[in-house]
Image (cartoon, rainbow over all chains, first blue to last red; front, side, top):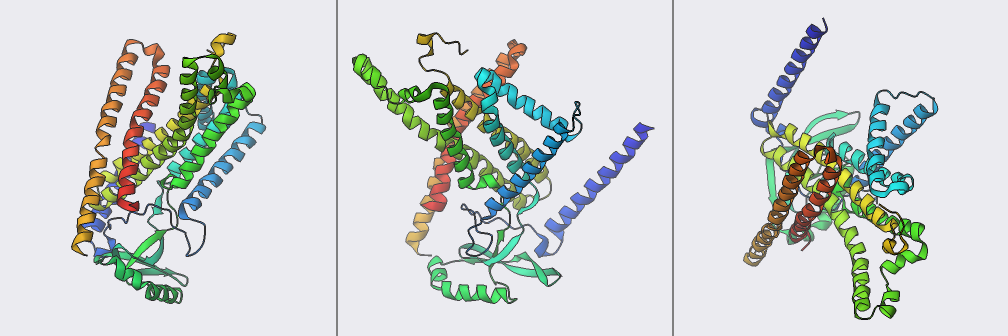
Amino acid sequence: MSGKMHEWKFGKKRWVILAMVALGVYAAYIGPSYLKPISPTVVLPAEPIWRGLWITNTMLATILADILLILLGISAYRFVKSGKLVPTGIYNAFEAIFEFLYNSVEGATGKWAKKIVPLVGTIFLLIFVANMVKLVPGFESIGWLEEAHKGYGYGTVKLFSIGGLPVYTLDKAQRTAIQNEDAAHTEEGAADTAEEVEHTGEVCTVCHVIPFFRGSATDLNFTFALAMIAVVMTQVYGVWSLGPRYFTKFFQFGRLVKGGVFGIIDFAVGFLELILEFAKILSFSFRLFGNIFAGALLLSIIGALLPVVLPPGLYLFEVFFGIIQAYVFFLLATMFISMAVVNPHGEEHSEAHA
Amino acid sequence: MEFNDAFVKAFQLLGAGLAMLGAIGAGVGVGIAASGGVQAMGRNPDAAPIIQTNMILGMAFAEAVAIYALAVALIIIFAA
């Protein structure tokens, strides 16, 4: 009986998928031009969600991921407090993830795992949830219309209105290139007045979209902040473990006094270690940013070029890469912290730090 | 667009493309890391978790070079 049930469900899903593919083909190749996907405008810095406001769309997406994570955390906490020993449903996944993270950290740092897991686990979960939230449809595509100042702009078609709020879409047929950037700058005043008119109901003529939400990791500020936290906390853990002695890794004055020629070399190597700490911040932040930004760019460009067959596969690819990048960030942070907490001259004191 | 601007823009894009040549080395590096990791796992399946962790670490370091190249290319296109 269950087999028959399963067959029926499979058939239903197949028809749904077929209908969606047909809809995609219609929208991309046959239908009116305002349904066709437009090639994306590549914007490197995050845009403010409202003119003049300091909240950017990547911040909004990060806050969304935070709220999701906090809700999940609260519900997991309530589940643990309820006293049930066998986890079910989503708590099972939580337990699996946590066990995996804890075992990885314990393998690298031994008895320090209990103190390190809260930090690196939080970083992993935040990057993971942010990368998954980024893939929700509507990210980077729904937003305010604004006058385009460079590159290309599109005309608009009114679709419908929710209450008093009209909803527009960009029309691929009405594509206009903005030729002269200098001219656009001299017309800035005029453009500003056009914006003013927009508030009273008029729309811009050559438009692009300022999205409400954009993936957190497509903003260098997000990844740079995480990298700063990871590297600064590495020093904190080092001092926690070794005391002020930790900084002798960077400034080896003892070796300089006692070690002769090799002491001088060791002293220089200490300075290199100091530079390496700053290089860590750069490599951490650019690795995550580069991967996720390139992924988002790839999705939107392929979505414009070949909108029917390829994007689902690429979405799967992005899910995979979101997990891998979160794991890589987590793993590197763990490794650096574990290198900081063990004594660099441990063999002299014969301390067991395997 | 003036001829000079078009000239500068063309070389800017060319430079960004050339900057991505750095990805060749990273691709080779990631391939070597994966090959070594898979061979090691085939010889000693019991040690697979440790090998996997170190393999992914090595891949991340190799990939970092490509990411630097990407950052340079993006800076050339958007910021320079």
